Length: 154
Image (cartoon, rainbow, N blue to C red):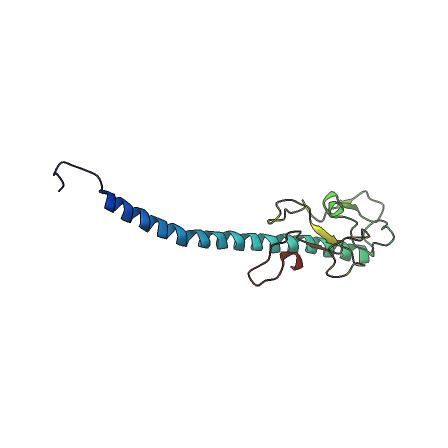
């Protein structure tokens, strides 16, 4: 029996409270993991779109003849991602440069800025870069999305 002045919980009450907390925690952890994965997927799509848009814009400028002399074999695509960040001299007498990216985005799955590159002369599913130009980028992670597709195929 409890005394009237005694405060606190009994051992049974502690075990019940702990069990309830454990059940709630086991339900919350998978939900938190799925939210983190969904955020990473959104960040990956955004980064890929940003880089691909910059490559397309570079190609448009090159095809229009607005960029300075192009290296042979690049077919109007940038030689590297760094070239998009550093900028390219515009054609004409003025010393103007145009930059297509402020910075190379970080891959949210690998945590670095080392993207897989594909040339326009490489196979569409190639994981090795020919080195001629940068036609496309992909993530170097081996993880797969919920639908079973590899993030490197996005």
